[in-house]
Each structure stands twice: as structure tokens, then as C-alpha cells.
Amino acid sequence: MPQLNPKTHFMKFFIDTANLDQVREAQDLGVLDGVTTNPSLMAKEGITGRENILKHYVTICNLVNGDVSAEVIATDFDGMIEEGEELANLHEQIVVKLPMIKDGVKAAKYFNDKGVKINLTLVFSVGQALLAAKVGATYVSPFIGRLDDVSTDGLGLIAEIRLIYDTYGFETQILAASIRHTMHIIDCAKLGADVMTGPLSSIEGLFKHPLTDIGLANFLADYKKGN
Ligand code: G3P
Image (tube, rainbow, N blue to C red; front, side, top):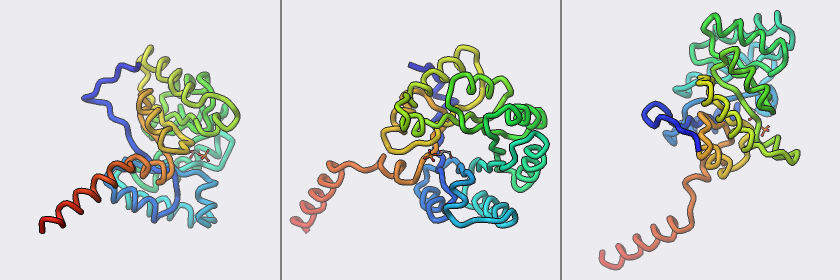
């Protein structure tokens, strides 16, 4: 099991969406630490065109108190730098999200040297996670659900990354992404993931229990009997 310092370590909850109602709802729950988005999630909400996309990021930043990952579209180094700088200048909460490809790693190093927060995304192996830590990424995003989809152990990847990062004291935060359901959150917490990002439904599943509902109904029924 991971040996984390409980005084400095707690699991952050991010919501993986560009839907403003869901961001608000998660924020209102009082457990939200940030938001992650990607081009597919923006498209799902019908947010298109550079200007609208940038505006949407600022709106999300103003709704939450934590980091908001905004992904570049460019896949070449110069393009990523240009886009990343534009994104980083939008709001102090923006974390520039870069793909785990050669130019993405180079761009991550560039931004890290400048003090800009980075999230290296589309991570599917320990080797990729090792590179993310070497260039000082703030976050590394292993996609556990998508690994599970292809009969590969997503949670196993989280455990391996935790082991390597702890062995060397890498400070890159493991952001378990592509969370699909509540048990993924619980398993990631057991494995010591620093952050999880998932849909609102996965977070809401944490407070659901039939015995809570039955117990509450009984308490209220008993109260009514005497009042
Ligand atoms: O934002 C990246 C990741 O969380 C995507 O999840 O469900 O599309 O595999 P999913």
C-alpha cells in the first residue's frame, strides 16, 4: 500500500465535463477541487470556434475554486507553445493540457521551466508516466476506463505509477482519468491516486446507500408517531 503523508496528501476530486450545470452542481456539493475538459467534451456541449472555447474556459474558472485543465489542439511543438501560452494567459486557474507525444513532452518541459502548470494527457503506460514526471508535469493523466475497455488493467497502471513516483519522490500528481463509475474512485483512493476526474454520476454514487435511505425513512416515521 502507498505510504502517503495524511497531513499533506488528500485526494482531489475533479469533474470531467464542459457542462456548466454539472460543474455548478458538483461545486455546490462542496467536494469539488477542479475541472478537466478535452476537445470531445467541449464538442459535446456544442462549444465551437476558438473564441467561444476560450470564453467557456474562463466561465468554468469563475465557477470553481481549483485547477481547470484546458487542452491544446496543436500537435507540433511551436503550435502547442502558442496555444498553451494563450490558454495559460486566460486565467490563473488554467492548467495547460498537452498530449503524451514527443512534442507534447518537449512543450511540457518548456512550460514547466516557465512555471506554467501542465497536465500530460492520453497516458496509457508507466513509461509515459515516467516521462511526464521527468519533465516536471504538474499532473499526469492515465486513462483507466479506456484501458479497461481493451481488457487491460487500468487500476494496475495507477498502482505501478504510484510505486515508481514514490520510489523516486517525483512530485507529479497522478490524476486518474477516464473514471467511469464510483468504484473506480474508491479503488483509486485505495491506490493513492492524488486526483480523480470523472463524471458527476461517479461522484454522486459515493453518497448513495439503500440503508441510509431506509434508516432515514424509519427515523422520520418514528418521529411522526410521537409528534
Ligand atoms: O478527460 C479525459 C478522460 O477522462 C476521458 O474519459 O470516459 O472519454 O474515456 P473517457
